[in-house]
Amino acid sequence: MATSHKAILIPHDITREIEEIDLPTGNYKEITKRVCRDGDGLFSVSNLGHFTFAYDDEGLFTQPGNINSRAMAIWAKVEGVSMRSFRSPLVGDYLMLGPADDEGENTDVTPEARRLAEWAQGLANQRNVLKATQDIVEGKDA
Image (cartoon, rainbow, N blue to C red; front, side):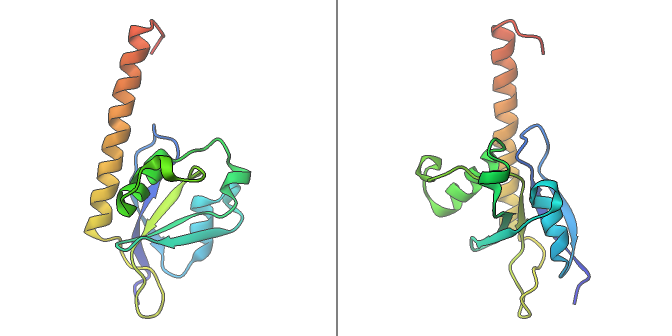
């Protein structure tokens, strides 16, 4: 059994890069630290085929303003729906975990998950450029 596995952290703050990280295998407190406010609480998981999302189970209550547009874009793309179809926004930081092995432990993220993360980062980079351009046009300080 591997002692760690690769995961992808998707911060809610689009000014922070999406990054690949090492997570200790079987250490669920580490997932809690990464996705729950103040590193404490309950997290949920949702299997989306090529990967599993881990996120703050109580995020709408503990992090209501921390909308994660990149996680929403990935989820919508995988499900083939519009982001407008979500009943509520996805909030807080999200982890993309690899599929579970025969023992139920997460494995490394798949190449497909990495491609989705890169695609979502590209969306954020485009938004930052558009926002900076809009600020310049409106005469706001950069």
